[in-house]
Amino acid sequence: MGWFSGIVVYVCIWWTVVFCVLPLWVKRDEGGPETTAHGAPEDPKIKQKFIITTIVSAIIWGVVYLLVTYQIIDFRGIAANMSDQDYS
Image 1 (spheres, rainbow, N blue to C red):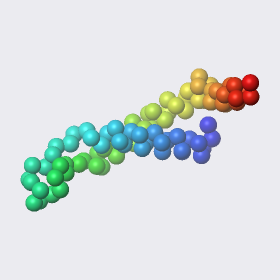
Image 2 (image 1 turned 30 degrees about the vertical axis):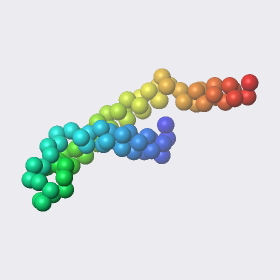
Image 3 (image 1 turned 180 degrees about the horizontal axis):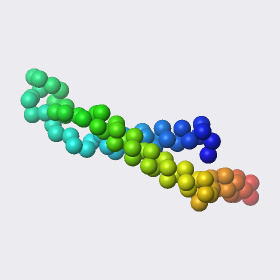
């Protein structure tokens, strides 16, 4: 995996993980609609969630990198097989 594809894969993983982490630890603000928007969280803890997202994404990216480097998952072989099936 080249450096550019590594960055693209990391960004895709990061965005997927951020949407999984955002709903965690959310408490609805019971102050009412006159103080905040209805259903807005009391304390969204965005900084903590972004740090968790970055760490989890780095771990997942590391696993994907190892799988691709040691050719446990061979995307070029998969693409070649798909190409061969198209022409037969």
